[in-house]
Amino acid sequence: MADQRGHVLEVEPCDKRVRVSFNGEVIADTTDAKVLRETGLPPVYYVPFADIRREVLTRTDHSTHCPFKGQASYWTVTVGDRAAENALWAYEDPIPESRYLVDHAAFYTNKVELEIDP
Image (tube, rainbow, N blue to C red):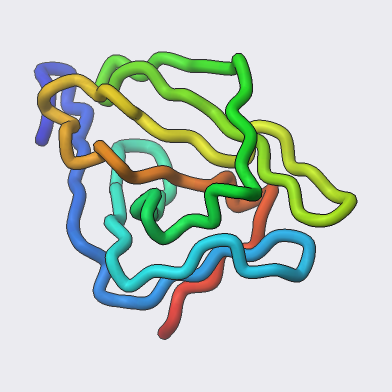
């Protein structure tokens, strides 16, 4: 999808297994991820919430707004004695053009380990 300014969002199913680890533990494991390619940004892997260990997540008050996706909510990931603040985000009620993001979340790869099968 491209807007009038030439900004492009392309989403497609990821045909590979995606695992996310933090502090030595797998916190997400899926074969149902979506990969979002957006103008000027590296690809982002969105994982179904159903495949994320919810007990390691704590919602924070942090939020951001994207004109192409909507309002993002954030969660801190805690495993053992380590925490990664605002390491996961999701568009719980995205704008209509980005409804494909409902029930999915993404992780900051500089805060967790993202592994994608070859």
